[in-house]
Image (tube, rainbow, N blue to C red; front, top):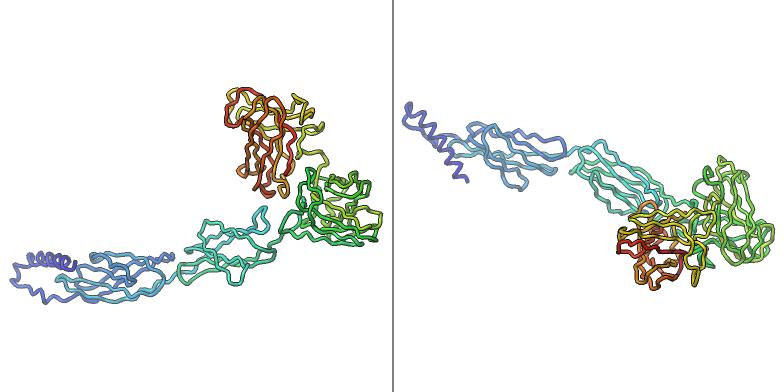
Length: 517
């Protein structure tokens, strides 16, 4: 390569000689000096890109090239007045400016190039809680002159930071409640950096509705008068309460007539819309007074209470406490429960579960029998199907109900035509993992599909198929939803008949949708 550039220089020299031949017959090529006073103006772009521009200068130079000093290939030769650009990492480098004269002689000059990055500016980090997930937080960040970010979530002493870029959202799930210092660092690509710190409090408050199923919530009961309440196994798992966990209140022998327990909620109860509280109860005897009392968290003298008498022994029943007259501004946050109020304790155990606000109006829930005279069974149909509440076409065998659901799959309807009904509350899968459905079909051997969907996000779903075996008669099909969890918040029940086949106008009937094992 040096020979080529030397030849170019000779070509320039020949042209020069041609122009000067009339004035002198001899030119001493060897007498031409090598370039002198060689240097370069280096300009560093102030955007943390590491980009450096070289503008060489010197005397008696026909072309230049640069050795950047960082181990990368040298530049190509370029003419005087030209520039070359190179991108460095932060550091100090010994570059070489190589200047060639008209006779091929070269002069090299070593020149230090110092590349330092600015600290990022205008760092903006956003730390946020995750809706519906009390233990998780997210971080996003942006800044000027940054190359990337690091975040320390403050959970462990020797934490490894998470690297991320602008535009990314980083999610972290904490193991425990507490206050943590989160540190976000904007890095320049070199030593300079900018740091932002913010504390986040992770809490897991007990909020209505309370179902005692969470493995992370602290259901902290305060007991008085000789009562004692703990979270315990459901003593009677069944259709009326499929929960795995419930609260157990033991009214110890000789305890006060007013013995009870309370739990404190994370926020005051909001009575602005719903005015009643419903609770599932289990008692070894019927006819006892169950009292619910609400208190202000800081001043227990601000309180209100309602009594209800139970009607079921050794079984679950729903009791509703009417707080319609309550003043919502009193900020009731402590919920107190008494069983067999007015009677001294005998050592009996009482259970309660699913504390929730309610309108007091009957709601659509499992088991779904279609027999209520007050409920509105609202079906939503799609794909050419149509479902309505209808009279039972065959009151024999396993189903003598008066009312059932009737799905007509219209002529030419889609193979996936079906209907769904929405429940008032999500299904609890802590104990019962299967659903049962009574069906009546004019033909046997068809696929009956049952699908469960999240009310807010239908992409969260699970479906199970069963094949009918009876024509023109009732049979009960079982759908195994193993793997479904209460956290899926399945609240929409979708039914398909003769799935995979276009409709022919046939009508199919269904009834008694319930959870089971």
